Amino acid sequence: YAQGICSAVHSDAATELFRVERIEGAAITELLFSGREDFDPELLTFQQLMTDLFTLKQSQWEEFSEMLPPELMLDAYSENPRTLILKFQPEFEDDKLVRVMVLAREVTEHRAMQSSLMNLTEQVERQKAQVPTLLGGQAQMCVQFLKDAESRIGKLHERITRGNPKAD
Image (cartoon, rainbow, N blue to C red; front, side, top):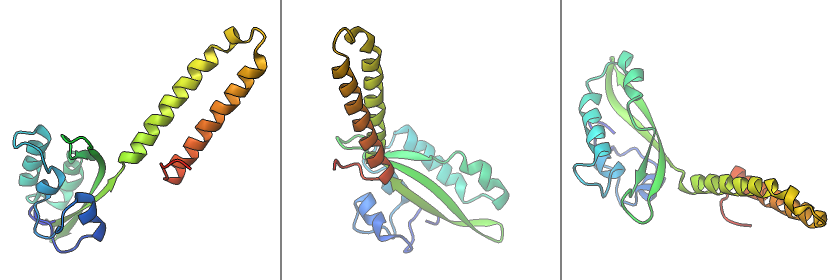
């Protein structure tokens, strides 16, 4: 985008990601903060950054870019918010910022899978701690339970690693 307005150069996936028919000509704030109130703190901060952005010299980019959001929630106030990871890539001409490419990747399902894996791991650790109590004559049942739990964690980890959060 240049001066906060999206240009004709964009991926086809962007229209799907932002759930709009047309990216070209849209304000970047409308895409990233759709559905938010005008007084939303993240929106206000981003708008202020956009005001200052195109006054930067190339030597100032690195420090300034650290203030840009690395991630944000799309549809933040809806029943189904989506998490985006953002990267901002500047384009300078004669030491003047003329355009910024915004790379956005949705990680909602991946984060949900990570959370599920962490919860399952914690559950197994709690259950392992109970093993000494259960070992009074039921050792084989405990061993089988632990093997099953380990297998479930392994399958979940494999799905996360493959990037396929859907159950097999």
